[in-house]
Image (cartoon, rainbow, N blue to C red; front, side, top):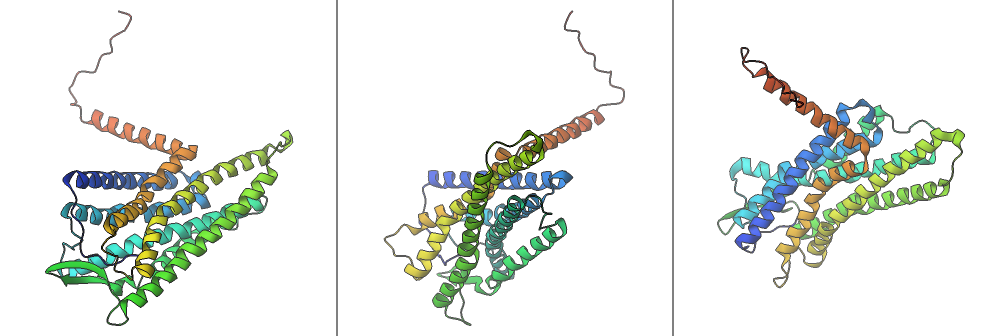
Length: 344
């Protein structure tokens, strides 16, 4: 979904500071939040459910944003150029990897959301049947998600390359000499748009609509003798609220950059008109896309008490380690600390 840009309008110092600060915040939140989510899930065996395994998969893919995409955007904000600062073979490889990593992260997330929706639908529609996605098949599906995401975006390793324009080096997407760039980019964008945007979102919408109807039909008083079913339905509703919120936020975050991609490919023919401040539009669209990686972990901690409990346990464990380290650093011949009686 990337188009070629070779210039950027200069920003005032205050604007650059604000942009850099915002990107620094989402980079920190993404790194810390997604790392905590992964650690909590794999530290607690009881949390290794199918849904949480897919959530951990999304968190791992979201880590690609602060590691690859955010540093690139921050450098471009500070230098006021879209120019690529690293030259040679290393710069060319990095150009391909950064663009590739950013977009496979989005693909992995949306494919994971599809399987979460399917797992939730099956669990609520057939509550008494064994889970359709077992832990073993979940691992296989996660591997397939990454293979599909990387396969769809593998043409990036041909298309993205360094090019010198007006004595400056840029990381651009071009399909020449094998193909004509504008027409090929339209076809490729359309394939990604249908396979990774339209079809998954339509499928997710259908599944969650069916889940909502099922939950609404069974909502009501439950006999005391059926406490297990009541507990199961309560847990299903909580998980449903969490994942629906994640889906809604994800769609909201990819919508602006998708609109930009449609305009760039089908309206502007990869050459936006001069009278449109498209650099600001693109910056906002990409920033909103990147911010999803910082927002999503917050949703888990807000909606799910198990994540909050896991977070408290990790902080408690870290505090014990720090206290143990501080005690081990005390000299052996130091006098023992005496406690003053507050009653004296």
